Each structure stands twice: as structure tokens, then as C-alpha cells.
Image 1: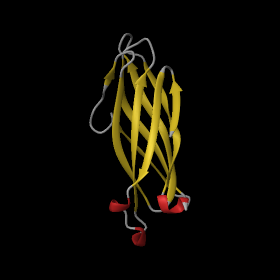
Image 2: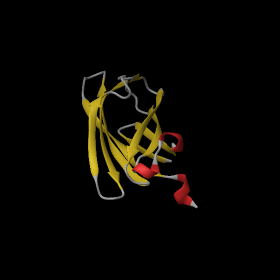
Image 3: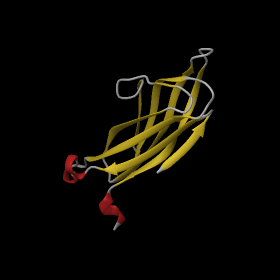
Image 4: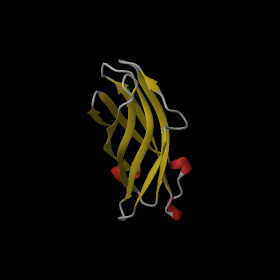
Length: 128
């Protein structure tokens, strides 16, 4: 589990290897990740967009950008949280991701970036 707090927004990430959706013989490894976003600040905030950096252990990388998360742009009042599950496919048995969320403070419309902590994706059979 990886956790990071930026400007009063706490991001926690848990990953799981998905063998039923993977095909190692074809270099296809699927991972899910659960993200919990918690507003620890004194302001109501809205998640506007995401920017991911994804790295395979073979040195290849890609970036993914888009509005919101899984089709929503959640509004979080102080003390509220939002949790979602998404996925990432890699061409290798391990890799890592990190990124940023762009949030908007509703009180003054100010945009700010929240760091998504770096987290590893590792096939369970690599742990033995």
C-alpha cells in the first residue's frame, strides 16, 4: 500500500495482480488498483483530471491523461472520501505507476495538483 498527502488530500493505493485476465505467454499482465481519495482539508474540492506515468520493467513507459476518474469528477467536502477501482495492463511481470490529480477548490475555483504516490505492480508468482 502506498500513501501520500498533498495540500490536504490523501491518496492511498492498493494493487492486485489479476491472473484470470492475464496471459503471460503473450506478455500480457493485468493489474487492478484501488484508490482511496480522502479530503483532509478545510475546503470542498473537486477532482477534475488525472495524469498517469506507467512503467514496465523492460524500460518502456507511457502516459495516460483524462478527465476525472472512471467517468466521474467527484466533489469531496472536508472529511469525505471517494474510492474507486481501475486497472492497468503491462507487458512485463512487474512495473510501477505514479501521477497527479488536478483538483479544484470550490470556494475560490483555484486549481491545484495532488501527487499520486508511486506504487508497484508485481505478479504474485514473482514473490515466491
